[in-house]
Image (cartoon, rainbow, N blue to C red):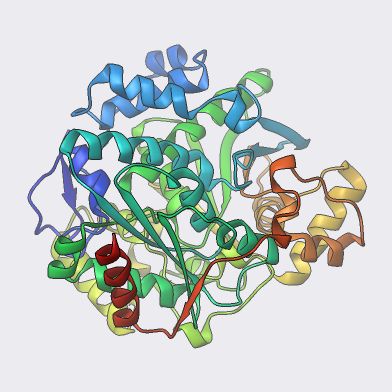
Length: 474
């Protein structure tokens, strides 16, 4: 299988090369030339596989240049009970009639990013060793990607990590998780701005061809195809689990996913394109509702950083959905020239309107969307705790609120649980009072540890200088 760019100006590439590169040289996002098609018989065979077995069955279709025995070894080392707390890896639990939660947050950093990032860490190390190369990871995080990446890559051979985060915009737990790491290959940079500013700096450095080549830049942000690939697996696994539990019903199965950067739900979209019979993919946003506007009105107009809200679901405080281009590329029948034109407009601040194709978005691709506010997430957290004895984090609450609001009579919805509540204790206490919030042993006391972070103004050249300084000192 070969990979191409959404902008159409990059030669087809193998999985191993795409894994390391981040943005394509032409500024687009890499994706397969076509998605593998899975028939009903194969789906039934996959239904009974363990998580590692299912991951191998899916990933081998996309990573065709990696030796299958090596791929299987990477997967088996990644998806273990000791790392994720159970052999299910991503267990589902029933919340109420026709509504399930998909537990994606049982990894080392208590967020869904671990599911992909733990695989990515092993895959990076493997590919770099094969190529005899080094890699400088530069990433941006609104809270969870950064810690998941750092925990997956800490101490890895031939990898240096520079993680940008918005200064003062993450929860206390999120900051402690990242900044308390003292591994010599981990470097935290807090940018005086919003997440979108951090993301813009990453893209600017990725698009500086000379700098990127000299310092071997790669990324672990959700634009990285390896992350999307790893996330496809749990859509299949969750669908099988819920339809086994609901075997006596004819209701359709949908997913509701809290979304800011469109990475997680993009994986669900690809699973659906492969043949997984997902009825609808429901995008749940917070007050930063750019994606909600698009899927309801066809208008995509990302906001500037100064018009992006700081909310109580901070990992979704994003106004430029980086993975959205992969979907638009398919929506526009792989018209690379038009995709390039539209996203150049986004870069210049104009956005675009595709109201004329919204019927296709809904009927052909099954998308819907809704919005949740601070008051909504507080009410949802309180309701689930008091009436279901289930404690969820604010982002998951956004998903549950939207799922309940948009649910149809003929539909079961699986809502992605994107983080554990302890990561956002301040909001939990505001919702239901000062209760004891369970936290894994390895996270106890991290807020008291020394923190290591460099604070910089919102300028790409300052980040570039910091990278140069560290790499040259090696």
